[in-house]
Amino acid sequence: MKIQLIRNATLKISMAGTTLLTDPVLLPRHGIDSFAGIERNPTVDLPFPAAEVVKDIDLVLVSHLHRDHFDDGAKSMLPRDIPILCRRVNEAELKKNGFLNITPIETRMTLKNMDITPTPGRHAGNEKWEAVLGRVSGFVLRAPGEPVVYWAGDTVLYDEIKTILTSVKPDIILTHSGGAELGDSGPIVMDAEQTIDVCKLCPDAFVVAIHMEALDHCKVSRQALRELAVENKISADRLFIPEDGEILIF
Image (cartoon, rainbow, N blue to C red; front, side, top):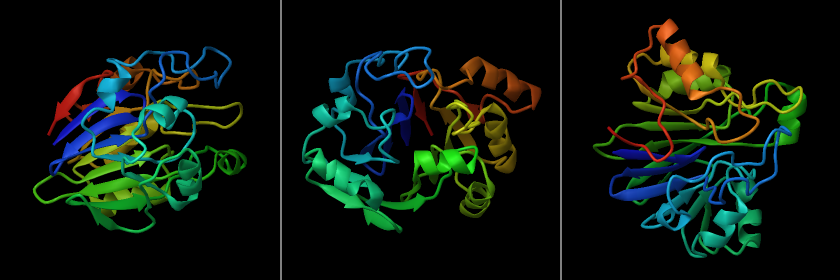
């Protein structure tokens, strides 16, 4: 299995002979409005041209349609007939944007030699912001002979996520760990402390922390997470904090 961080939550995951692209954000640096009034987003450029990002992909997996997870670059650059998996709440919007091969997923399904199971998430630190930000999703990916992958998506760590972690027992956990905040929202994705809690809950799993240092409302740096991991005796061969463009092979 190969996992490549492109930028933010955009990943290329290659398993069971299939390459998935997650939450494609393909615009160049500063192509999206600011979220925190600090700087336009993304705050960094892609590690290589967007045309290379979409090259040789078999499937797009979408957790939700906020601009930092599916942007105008994705709308214009992805092939109209590329298979896209999303939650049903996002289906109409993707069709409106001209995509022709959309499969809504609400329960476990098999596609391209993989079992894909959607999971819930809570994209807010409080109820007011949860209502504003709407429904988000994670996914569990399984394939014969491959590690079990849990992509948590844009969620904080709460009881339902803990139950998924302890019941699914994933081999690889992908966390959005930038500690993003909007106004008085509190963290709307995991922060450094919650990421370390995931490591402690799943001591036999590899944790890959992404969604960092690419958006102006994300407050947790890679270095801060590394330092907290050291303080908590979480080794670098269990918690991976990849740079943009970096490839991890499991």
